[in-house]
Amino acid sequence: MKQRLIRTAAALLASLLTAAAAQAQAPKPPLSAADSDPARLGWMVGSPPPADKLIRWADMSFMRFPQLRWTFANFRQMMPTTNVSRGDGPVAVLPRAERGDIDAITFQPLGRSDTMTWAQSLQANYTDAILVLHQGRIVYERYFGVMKASQPHIAMSVTKSYFGTLGAMLVAEGKLDPNALVTRYIPELKDTAYGDATVRQVLDMTIGVRYSENYADPKAEIWDHVRAGGVFPRPPGYSGPQSFQQFLLTLKKEGEHGQAFAYKTVNADVLGWLIARASGESVGRLLEERIWSQLGAEHDAYMVVDSTGYEFAGGGFNATLRDMARFGEMMRLDGRYNGRQIVPKSVVDDIRAGGSKADFAKAGFATLPGWSYRDMWWVAHDEDGVFAARGIHGQTIYIDPKAEMVIVRFASHPLAANANNDPTSLPAYRALARFLMR
Image (cartoon, rainbow, N blue to C red; front, side, top):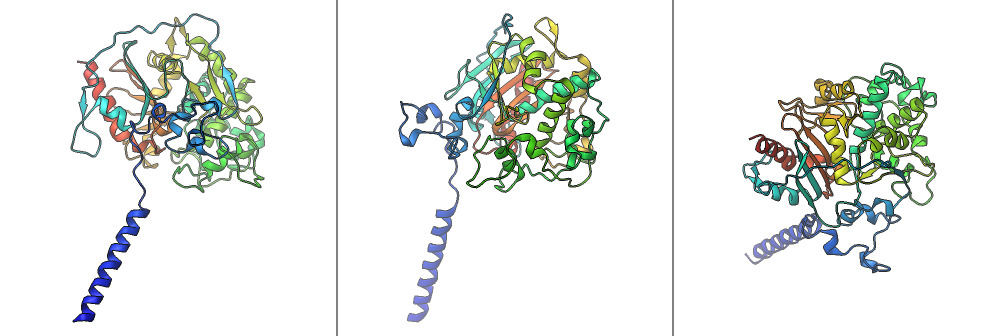
């Protein structure tokens, strides 16, 4: 009897120790939006900042949460950039008709039975800044943390849609042949995955290339990509590619082209190279000449560049919230804005028509059923004709033509993939559209 009690007590103790160990090893939930507010935490304040408030590029603290909530509004302080000028024309006025009833809008998040308000969704998604245009007028504008109206913020992969638009413009002008092989313009890629790929396959990301975009996998090729471009620091003894273009030369084929959508940032850098070869200008300069200086923007934008001065077309664009909204409004208005046709209507029509829904479905984006991808834009194929530019950690330009609505959001969600914020973002956007159409 005594030994049985001893065994029982020992088993209970082992169970308690195992549970305690499991609890100790379980990842802690991230700080809330309020508790991770970069202004409240005082990052980089002081001359110099105290050691516990210092954010550095070299030790990767600039991309750790919650530090990244400061970094996303201050990328220029972390790495080399080049300017994208607004030009010297007058600012295109954004009329204001702000509404005080938007915060109380309610909706049901995807996969849940409860409801949430618009205001609650902004906190749930770690929103840094958000602006809503309705019929060309600002009806809602908010800034959080260290953000303000004059502060640029990293756009992440929203960048891709800017250059997808430029690429489609060059196609419309006959400077890029969508059916031509990439190697017609970039013969250096003949022995890579892109040796037998077409320009159209690059634009729509139906490329078979060995390259993982899994942000949760530290061994994914996306990390090698950004280290080559100097966006992330390189480990001691690094001897790999020294630039984005050098990294492209290392890529090998995996699977067939034109069979399925596969979202891979490296395709945007190939597109950037195609744009540079077809236009004779860098992507940043072409963006400045053809779009940014035509919008009546309030502020210059900027691009992250590698050690050769080559712009990061996959995710290096930084701009202010209102200027991003001007771009979104231009796309909503069929490419016409600020008194001029900036992007041909035929290009906007091609983007809004979308790509192959069957090819897109193979990628398994659970929060985007029925969507497709065209010219590096995400297309919903819904009754409102929604199309969007999207970037990790919650960046977006969301355009709803039927509701005459454009939403631009900067965010710094602790988890990179948009599947983490879509459940409380997409239904919120739809609820707002329905509210504004009443």
